[in-house]
Length: 99
Image 1 (tube, rainbow, N blue to C red):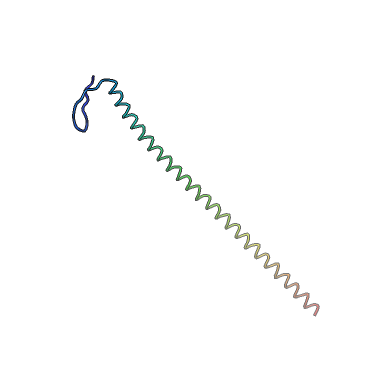
Image 2: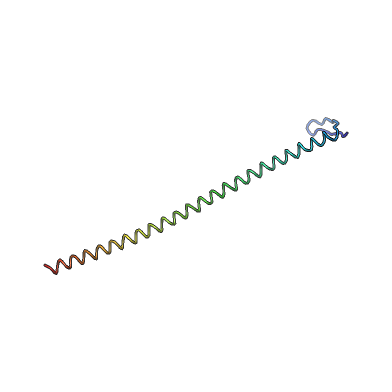
C-alpha cells in the first residue's frame, strides 16, 4: 500500500496498487481525451481555412474568367459595329452611285 496526499485538501490516504493504477489510468485517459480534443479543434480549423482558401481561389478564378469573357464580348461587339459601319458605308456608296 502507498500513501498519497491530496493536492487540494492535503489529506493523506492509503491505496493499494490496483487503485493507484486506476487513478493513473484516469489521469492518462483524461489527458489523452484533452489532447485529442485539442487536435480535433486544430484539424477542424485547418480544414475551415483550407475550404476558405479554396473558395477564394475559385472566386478569383471565376472573376478572371468573367473578365476575359467580357473583354472578348466587347471585342466582338466592336468588330460587329465596325463591320456594320463598313456595310452601311458600302451601301451608301452604292446608293450614291445609282443616283
